[in-house]
Length: 409
Image (tube, rainbow, N blue to C red; front, side):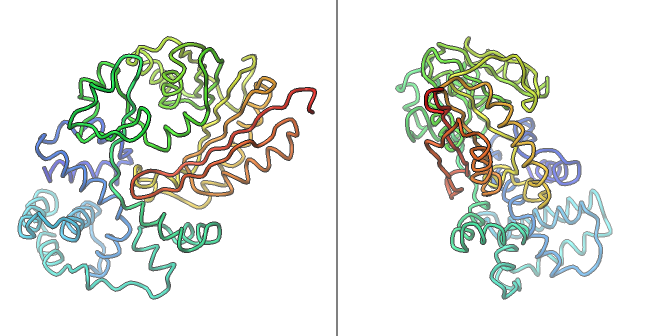
């Protein structure tokens, strides 16, 4: 199992593979009895990447190969956070893996892992710097969150990025019953949302037959927030992979029309395949740039789930923590504005434009809505929600903007 895990982490950290997609495509290669533990170590190592590297640097004062560094942080995570795995087993397996790749570093690996002590790690006295290291988040993000939300909320959000979140699934009410989900595999949450207690969702018969889909609680709330009704015309302008579109289609009882756009053809194919799996006929797709929409007509509801920095989903997508840069959001803000601007002319009178992100950043959320409303007096803000990331779910922002009738403008 640890050899598979080691290679999985090297693929993410050295080859740039996305953690969630790698796990989805390769978890079945790990022995079934070890999949739950492997998933925890895989995500836990990535979530604590910054802190674990900080620990390595306290024990190693010379340059070491990246594969050895990855082996050390993977092993330190297990030593520090997994009580039920014997320390000698973790050390012995790490030494064996080192022998297979870098024979000259087996002594260093053995020495570091024998000396490692979580309680002996020296942290900075400054509260922001200390939190940055403990949560494996860059200092600039800690400072930005502190200025926007206060230090207490910043601490909560930062430490929530270290959580292994439950797997949420959405029941498809069009081809399943609540009784079918009344098993040990599921725990009911709300409406059509359940926690799934297995590992590989895609291998479950309910998934293959279209009776359920993976969807986080916050993402599901955005789909519900749109409030798409039976018979309505809906545009999901940045739809791939289509999770929210499918949730809306199910709540519309597959009656009406949902047009799903994405700029990439291969991602449009993902939407089409999921609609087919879920037996949904009201889903239509088109490959189009959401910043340059033309000749689409008008819609009762438009969902602008725009590209964003992703600061609300750091627990679910820990590789964002490793690659994030402060300038990323500066390049995204103009794109978000263009998408909103492009969508505005396609909303029917008294129709609604829903703006949403999976980030926690007022510049991308509240400030964007403010900017849009200042230049579009024909729209008014009728509802707004910020779901902060917690120990049980990711963070999302959503705002509902209604287009006034011509008599009210």
